Image 1 (cartoon, rainbow, N blue to C red):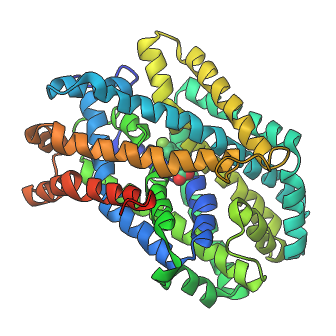
Image 2: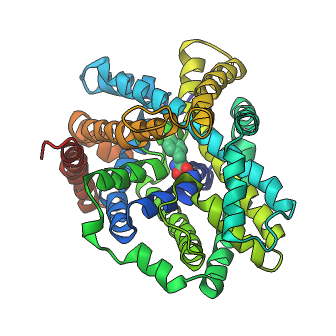
Image 3: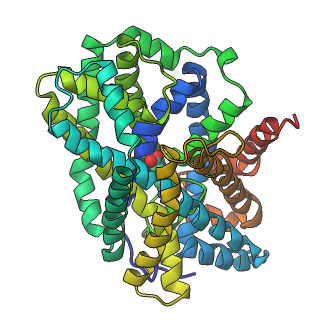
Length: 450
Ligand code: PFF
C-alpha cells in the first residue's frame, strides 16, 4: 500500500481535524437540523438522531477514514485497490461512484441554500431587520425565495468561490478554519444567550429534549438516521478522501470522537438558539427550510449590535457551508485527476459546471416550479430525500460491510491502531452487526416490510 496520496497529505493531526470538522459542520447543523427536528416533533427525533450518531455514525466514520488512509486514492480507486487486496470483487469501486453521484446531487442544492445565507449577509448588514416583527421577517424571506434570478445569482457565486478553492487546494481555507470555526461557535453561544433572555427558553428546551415517541414514525426515524450520515459527511467518500490524506501515525479513534462531538455540539447550540425564538414569536417549528431565515433575523433585529452580530453570523455560516462544499466535490475531482489525467483546474471547471446546472432545478423548485412534484416532492425535496435518506445510508451500510466483513481483521486492526484490543473488538462488532442491521431495519421499516 502507498504511504502517501498523490494529491498530498495533511501536515498534522490538527489540520486533519480542522478539515474534517470543516466538512462536518455546515448547513446540516445550523440550517437543516433545526428544521427537520421541527418537522418531526422535536425530542424523540433529536434522541434518535443522537443515538444514530453514537451507534452508526461514530463507528462508520472510523471505518471510512481507515479505508481512505489504507487506499490513499480517490474513493473509487481506493475501493477498487482495497477490494483487490482483500481478494474481493473490484465491483466494490461502485461504492465510490455512488459517493461521487451523491456529492454532485448534495452540492447542487447545498450551494443554493448557501446562496441564501450569502444574500442574508447583505440583508442583515443593511439593517432591514432592525426592530422587525415575525411577520415582517417571514415576508422578506418569502419575497426573496420567490425570485429565481436572485437565487440563481447567489447560487452561481457560491459555486464559483467553492470551485476556486478546490482548484487551488484547500490549505489556506484550513488555516482560516482555525479562527472561523471557534468564532461561529461563540456567536451561536451569544444567540443562545439571547434566547435565554428574550425567547421562550423553557419551551424550546423541552421541545428539543423531552422525547415523546408517539410523535415520530418510521419516516422520521429514517430522516434522523439519514441526518446522522449527512451531518458527519459520511457514506459518500468525503471523509474517505480526507482520510486518504491523513499521515499514517495519527490515531483514528480519538480524532473521530473529537470531530463528532464538535459537530453535535454545533447542531444542539443551533437548536437551542432557534426554538425559543420560534415559540416566543408564535412561529411554527415545522416551517421547513426557511426556519433559520425566519427566526434568527428577529433576534438580530432586537438585540444590541444585532446588525453587526447578524452579519457576522451569516458570514460564518457561509464559511461553514464553504468548507463542507469542498469535501462534497473532492472525491469527483480527485478521480478526474487520477483517471482522466486532468489538471485540478479543468477537473474543477467540469465538476462545478455540472453541479451548477443540477442546482438550477432547486432554484426553480422554490418559485416557478414549486408545484411541479413527483411523489409529492419538489425537485429540492427529491434531491434531499434521495441523497440524505437513501444514498448516504446505503453508502454507509456498504462501508460498514466492507470494513467489517471483507477486509481482513489484521488489516483493519493495524490501520486503525486503536488504544487496546477491547475497543477494537467493540468497533468490529458494531460495524459487522450493529450498524448494518440498524440501517437495514430502518430501510425495511420505511418501505413497510417490517
Ligand atoms: N456535513 C455537511 C453539513 O452538515 O452541512 C454536509 C455534507 C458535507 C454532507 C460533505 C456530505 C458530505 F460528504
